[in-house]
Image 1 (cartoon, one colour):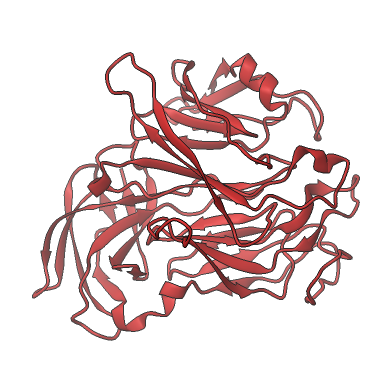
Image 2 (cartoon, rainbow, N blue to C red; image 1 turned 60 degrees about the vertical axis):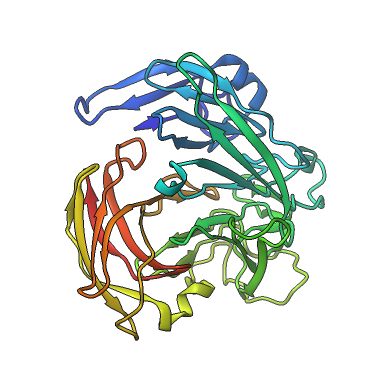
Length: 387
């Protein structure tokens, strides 16, 4: 387990923690401590809730504010500097944006594409009425062409979202689409003072869908709106039936809004909501898992039987593993979708022969939700343990 970021003391504004730690379950009583690259710390200023992704190579994508590195945390080697994220907005607390790594698919040789959504401009510290960022950025991480060569990058590719969003939540669906929810159109994350009110106003009530496979300029679609403000400390998690659990909000009382909404009774919001993505309603094309193993091993075949929710003859075109959610401060730190090789599809007997991911770098060992897909329509999930 890689632990990085935060401060040396209680509360924002104290000194950055200059080290990261690695916890090994084989030696659980100690951690290995190594220094964070000093130029990186100096540039980001506040290393809060950085966006970290384990790459198929075993290296780490490490991003904070507007900059980042590809690094090997085990050897403390900072290999390649990321190009700075362009544009108006920072991405880390209190200028909080969100991020996802798009699905790692075997048909694309597990190509790595990472996105950063929204955020806020650093000048909002002195002007909370500044609009949040309306842009997303997408970068492709290319592995070294040969030993000793650096990583290369394509991007950042900039696209306009449907509306400004700071403190938004980006949730990756089994079909590779991303749902953006929550956050505000103005201000910053956090509270105005210890125990004080919100630093953000004008909640963004509308969900948006991002389809990475759609033609450029058509990837964002505005969806339904909530009646509940979801600002600081809100979160979203994918469930096993393919819906999204939307919950939380701190400092969501007595805020300005350009739309009517249902105000909480106190500063904190305790009501929960369920959001249904568009593909969830496609019952006629939805597969249903009948049987799946409880444990699967890396690069080993396993079988799954299936039918359809309404039509027993629905096809299955792909299968994916989706890691369970672990969310805080607008970032799902465990979010990951990994495609499975389909070795054989027997549509007559409704049996799939699938191959588990090739290594722990592709899919770290843990429980996953197994989803079957028919195009963009996905099934309910079955839990499997990968190891």
